[in-house]
Image 1 (spheres, one colour):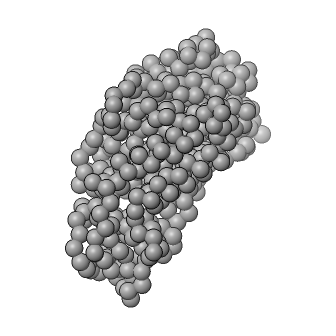
Image 2: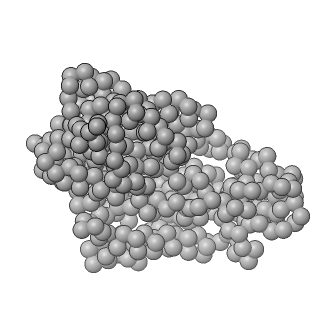
Image 3: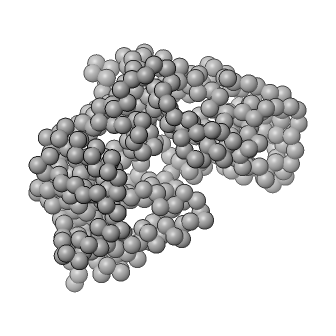
Length: 418
């Protein structure tokens, strides 16, 4: 449907709008005192403070508690196709710069390795609210979760194809993974399928010099988690000649990087049969099939069993899914994180290395750190922190937009008790 500019204005209550006044992009339904003019859901409206002060342009959706998502704060910068193209160009230029894109081989070069994939658009952090686009080699996968940008997605995708083409990358196909249940909160149906011509949805990519087959149709989220790219590189440093336990492996990415770092053996575990099948396929693709072994099962069952068997590993890596997607379930999530970290620490050799992370925005950094401390105490282990990391820079953290910061990643040495 594209862009529809309405004549409507949204007027905030006195004292409200704290989020957007701090630099955020969301106006919630309970912050609004009245509406002036006419509009349809998904249209662009003006947002004004209680005293008439202009605060920005954004798209409105009465079906959502996030009533308006801002796209521009400048009164002379209304939402146009040119603005969309500029936003996409800026997003691509930023990623080219931080990852060292080379048009001669169509690859990113960083930390001595190469990659051909990145998150191209990261919603609010790229000022295109509610939309995510991942570039897997020459394929784009889109997840659209907000009505306004959903109506603009053809414009956004056309801009993506154009800016990539200008740097030598011809997009072979686009697949939509707008099948997250959160769309229902926006009054939108779940959508999954090709946009344009059909293509083989098993896409081979390269990341950190390692090859992966990514299933963009059936894999989790958009098919592959690009946010751990640099964290996977970091794990290599502690894996030389190590026996490694890779828990919640998904498609084997941490285990493959451990093998690339010189691990003697890797045991990769995941609850998904599909994930383990893909892990085995990716190990063979990279010549690591003699190093990596696999087990399908629930980590909450496998970790206690390994402890009971007396198994110990030089390196233990925990990369669980988000245990909480709302503030209401944080307490329960803390229990889960504490449990897996206790179990993981107990099967880590003294003097060995322990990597753990949380990908939930609601599991805030201080709370996650506190949970790890409690797990170490309960496991009777002492931790020496090697480094703390976050999501890769192609998932930029926009200050004042708290949801853009979600991934917390620690590497520790487990120090002998004294």
